[in-house]
Amino acid sequence: MPRTLKRKGNKILQEPLVEFENLRKNKISSTDNHIKFLASTFEMIIDIENSKNFLVKMEDVKLSYDNNIFSLEMQESGEGRNKRSVYLEELKKLHIFVDTSSIEIFINDGEEVFTSRFYPNKAKINIEVFNHGSCSYYDLDEFKIDVE
Image 1 (tube, rainbow, N blue to C red):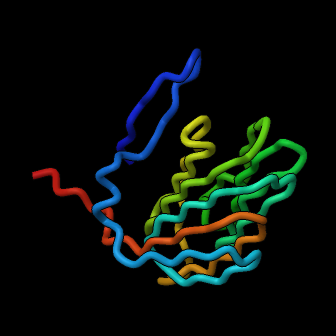
Image 2: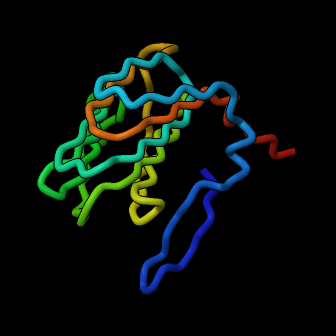
């Protein structure tokens, strides 16, 4: 996924290109602690407020934050990639892109970024979010890029 690189002090931040916003179709916003949403290709922005514990489940993918450790855990859909983690002072925001073969997770406006192969078993993915914040979901047009 193409990104914009920015420097903040001694750190390089990675952000998705703003042009991806042109792919957005329907927006769904929620402040519920438990959300179910069906989609196959989507963008999800989660603003997190004072959360010590946080969890997102998408099929057999789990994003969690506990004791300052953010983790991405995958089962079969990750094709052999099981778990990766990073220490965070705090978790404020997740910006997630999912398509038919990958997941991109931009943490705290690009302070950390996780990318992995992701092969959903279904055409639509059930998403459950357990947190104390607000979520915005967008159905996206396909990510296909014309290289000709």
